[in-house]
Amino acid sequence: MSKKIQSALISVYYKDGLEPLVRLLHENGVKLYSTGGTQTFIENLAIPVTAAEELTGYPSIFGGRVKTLHPAIMGGILYRRDDAGDVAQAAQYNIPALDMVVVDLYPFEETVASGAGEEDIIEKIDIGGISLIRATAKNFKDTLIVSSRAQYEGVVTLLSAKGASTDLEDRRWYAGEAFGVSSHYDGAINNYFLGKTSADEALFEFANLPAQTLRYGENPHQSATFHGDLEQMFDKLHGKDLSYNNLVDVDACIGLIDEFEGGDPTFAIIKHTNACGVSTAATAKEAYLNALACDPDSAFGGVVITNVKVDLATAEELNKLFMEILIAPDFEEGALELLKSKKNRNLLKRKSVELPGIMFKTILNGVLVQDKDLATETAAQMTTVTEKAPTANELKALEFALKVCKHTKSNTIVLAKENQLFASGTGQTSRIDALRQAIEKAKHFGFDLQGAVMASDAFFPFPDCVEIASQAGITAVVQPGGSIRDKDSVAFCNANGVSMVTTGVRHFKH
Image (cartoon, rainbow, N blue to C red; front, side, top):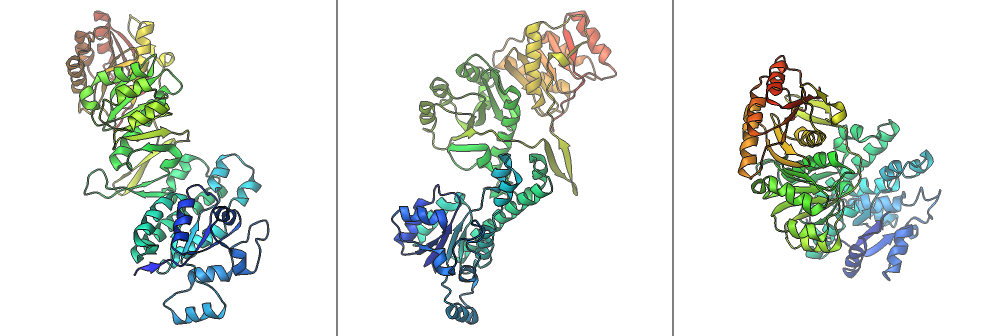
């Protein structure tokens, strides 16, 4: 049933993005009620607004702890418009109907994250706001709840199209969103009082995280929801909403590029969670072009990420590639304008945020939980097991190759030279197939493997991998070690001038 909004209570902490909604309601003759700073904000727009105190007969008391908790407000939200008894009581006590409530909540999580003291944190536990949200959502048959500033734009579009009216389906949908907001907020408070303040612990309370319904899942016939706050991680500068597969690839991008945090300019190109190009160089442009050279075929339609600001020179090269998403810590103004020229290209500016150190996966009738693979071996953790030791340049290349290997589906072999991925064999059922795939790809794209290095995510059960690698020109190898036949691989390397190091750390990735 369609209902025209006649009155609205607006009481928000954040005012950004609110003006278009206030003006739209005013233009449609909606009577506005408000409190405190929001009332001042509306008055500064030269729009008539009635103070909530005129309804309640009480000012804001106890330092602002009590403003809207009053029958004149709660009754105006909760009374049932189709119930004769409720209507009569509302008239008896002069309680005006409130058809719409726009409210957000005190920034409790932000205050906790800021390191504030407990007194400040407790004062950011919203009482009136959460009550308004739950009351309005409960009475969705009659009232519309706008429970987050992220909803302002959508509500403006909805009310503009419907002349400040809403259908039952509209109100029910926003009610569902509102209960999600309140659930997440209460969950955050619960976590605080129980001492659960890390991203790891919060992850288990995913039902309390903001929920975003995706267009579909991994495939169009699968439904999907993302539980989390993408706005904490990224500023979306351009493009459409991310899909399920986009999010999976973005997650893979973040994991890989973080291996190069604080280092020289690095670019990675991801396709179906595997790297099809990675390079570190003196400039962003050089790093990108070297990454693209690894496999320009697979790069088409991929996800690109860098650890440095994107300048115009680099953007001019990037703009030639069809990509789904580009992620960077920042963009030069000219670069951003150029990259926005492609309508469906997603541009994400990454923010600094704590990421969970655990991961979990539903399996059978339960859940698998494990620590993330945060081990990254450097030359200091490599033990030379052959007569010939790697050169300084080979050690640097082995470190680079291991970083890529760690983030590639098993079984995997990675071939590289210093600061550039040449090729990888990914997701193969045997290690030797992964090696053959990598060699074939490297040769196809014109790479000379003479003097290149090889990284393996697990040990070599037989010497066949080092035999084939040596024939292709590989001169240094890194592997975890631990096979009962390690001595066979070492013996071959000694006889053929190949250096081998072991790390003792396996990097399976399923």
